[in-house]
Image (cartoon, rainbow, N blue to C red):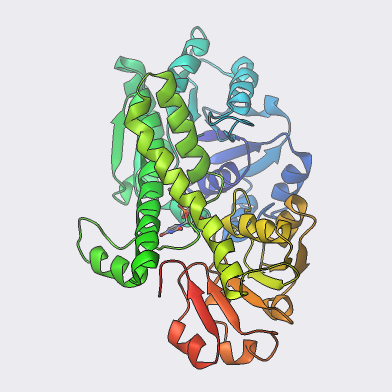
Length: 435
Ligand code: UGA
C-alpha cells in the first residue's frame, strides 16, 4: 500500500518507519528541513530506543523516503496526519493550527478513493468538522488515535495493544475499514484487538485513556500526601492495593507526577472542550488531578528546603534527570526540569544531568548548569535529587556517590531507590509519600 505520513515528530517519524516495516511504500513529509535530512539519512532527530535501527532497516528497503514537498504525497492511497496539538498559550484548549494547516495543505493533493487518517489527539468534534471540508474530494476521513508511549514507541507502533478506527456511517465507513485493515494487516493477524466506531467515540477514546492514566497517577500522589501526613508509606500502599486486579499495580508509582507532551495538555484540552459542550462538571475532577500533580513539584522544592535546614539559597543541588520520563529526550512539561528551575529561581545553584535530554533542557532553561554525568553533577552537592528514573540513576552506588558530595542528602523523586541501602551508606534519604 502506498502511504504518506504528514508530520514527522515523535509520532509520525516512528509511524512512517513502522509502516515501511509492515511492508508498505511510505513517504514522510515534514516542513522542518533539518528533520527531513536527518530522517532521510537514517538518523532519528530525537532519542527513541530502536528508532535508528528501524529507520535504517526501512530506508534500505527503498520503500521509505522523506521530503519537505507535500506534493509528493500524490499517488499515496492512505495519508496519515501526525502533527502536534499543543496547549494554546494562556489557555487550556488545544491549538489546532497545525492540524488545520495540514488538512488544508493535503486537500488539493487527494484523489478519489483516498483515505485521510487523523492520528493527532484532537478535541471531540474535530473530525466531523474536518470531514465537511473533504466533501467533493472523493476521499474519506478516518480518525485512528495513537496510544504509543515515548521510550516504547517502536514496540507500541509495531505491536499496539489495540487499534481504534473512527469511521463515517455506511459504505464509506465500511470501505475505509477495509483499507485500514490492509494497512494494519500484520498487527491484526497477530490478534491485536480492533474497535470500529464513530468519529466522536474514537476522539474520546484517546483523551479518556490519557485522563484515566493521569487520574491514576494523581490518585496515588494524593495518597502520598496522606502518607506524608500520617507517617505511612506510599510504596507499600501501592503494592498492597495493586494486588487487587481491579486496581492493578501499573501507573501507581508515586513521585514527581506526570509530565510530557501528552498527559498534561490532554487533560486540560479535555476540560476546555467539556466546557464548550456545557458538561464541564463531568470533568471537574480533572482540575483536581492537575492540581495534585502540580503540587508534587512544589512539595519537592519544600522537601529540598527541609533537608537543607530551612533554606536552599546558595546550596548546590544536583538534579538527576531532565527528561519527563526515562528513555526519552523529551523535556516538554518535565517535572524534573520544572523542579530544577524552581529551585534555581529560589536561589540554589542547580546542576542538572541527563543521559539524553541535556541539549533540549539547555534550550528551554539556559540559566541552569548542566553536567555530563551523575558523578559530575553530584560533585560538591549539598543535595542530590533523583528526578527522572533512568536505569543508571536507579543503580547508583550510594557508597561511591558519598565520596563526591558535600552533604549526603538524597531526595528520591520517583521512589525507586532502596532507602535502607542509602541510609546504611550514611545518607539522609527522603522521598515523596514515605517516612
Ligand atoms: C502517554 C500515554 O501513556 C500513551 O498511551 C499515549 O499514547 C501518549 O501519552 C500520548 O498521548 O501520545 P507518554 O506521554 O509517552 O504516554 O508517557 P507515560 O508513560 O504515560 O508517562 C507520562 C508521565 O507520567 C511521565 O512523566 C511519567 O514519569 C509519569 N508517571 C507514569 C508517573 O508519575 N507515575 C506512574 O506510575 C506512571
